[in-house]
Length: 395
Image 1 (cartoon, one colour):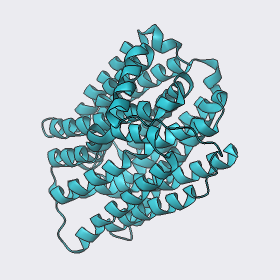
Image 2 (cartoon, rainbow, N blue to C red; image 1 turned 180 degrees about the vertical axis):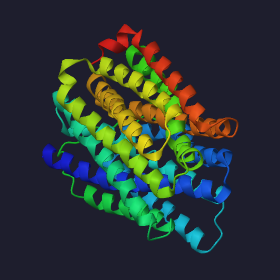
Image 3 (tube, one colour; image 1 turned 90 degrees about the horizontal axis):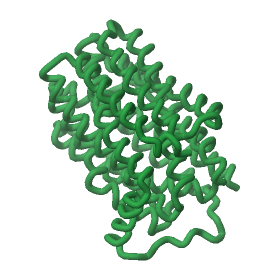
């Protein structure tokens, strides 16, 4: 039964992540094309990730309190309806940076419900010893989607308008939620907590304060993502367009290159994770993430950017897969929704701040210099984590 469920979840993620990959290319490129401003582009990117800071923890509480499959359905359908409004505004000629930013904010607000529900659902149907490998397999859905999605977007942009990419994203959410209908649930589901929402939230925060290694893990995630996410979301399209003279299709193929590197990284985790503790693997991934970012300071062309992004992408799943497995294996399932919402808050919330910061810095200096500075910062965050024996010993 769990083989069937994991297969369905993998296909669900593949489809929805393809929509996400296409959406991210369309959103950032559209805003930068409309305004020509790196600052406004960074602010709109920030608006697309701010909901995690406001609603992320509540998403975790809901995942521990209500049916997790139902939450995933609600998240998908709501995102589909919201993103469909963007091509409507473009069609009627009323779209501007502020309106698109508001719609992006709403889409991500609904999206904050999905990750904690999904990551908390997986341990319900997978044995604890198999979690790292199952997470590795599940992660390939995202990487394959981010390989195929941008390549598909690059081809599509050559024959259709950018509005088509938003429509594709909306349809992908509907297709994903249809697939979720075929999940087979346990006959005796876990009994969710029924305490008041605020009390649940406090108990989740109390848990990470009492379990130092998990608290360190989340804190390190916050620090690292300040340096990592902004260059990836805002810096890369500016680098491709303003420094390397590339097109939207070039940007799409650069993004596809990153997904190719992530696929390689997922295979490495699947193949060799038993040789090292998950905590040590995660810290190695952080160091790799930072040092490879610095190389973009010297990238002279689109082909070289694709090669470098492939190398950089290898380290990303080493971080995300091991972090997920650490929480799933070392904490009670009744806390998983809240803990994964904290991780989601750390990643997406810091993406909002980092995107705005990169947009501002890119208006003051060459964006290649931003990659160098942020890469050094990310590498140092990995060194700080390496100093913690609690983190190194986590498995």
